[in-house]
Length: 136
Image (cartoon, rainbow, N blue to C red; front, side, top):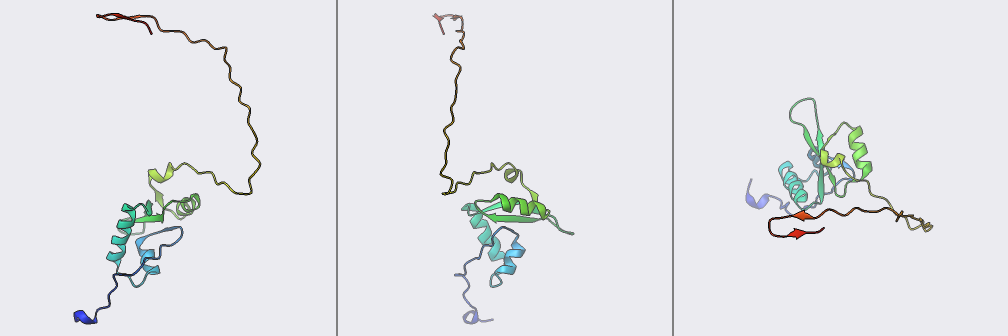
């Protein structure tokens, strides 16, 4: 094929899917791309922290496929990946859930906190050193 007949595909934009995905499913959604180009774009997005690695998906043969998600990873994405048989990385399993705040939640109640101030603290005895005595 002549160089002049090739179509310039360097300006293509990746359509990142919602939820979790593999490179193969990403290739199915972005059919204009070549597989290696998508792998490079995924690698760059991982470096920029626009994507996160969820874990691996074991098929019937061969290496397990890496599973990705757009950052920040939601709890729904983690649950759906887990239900689909994805082996989650430890970094994803130990994610702390974040509280959702809605504008309609305007009722905030004050919480009274009582502190017991009758507790006494013992002081440490003097420590002898070779140079001087220090009182703590």
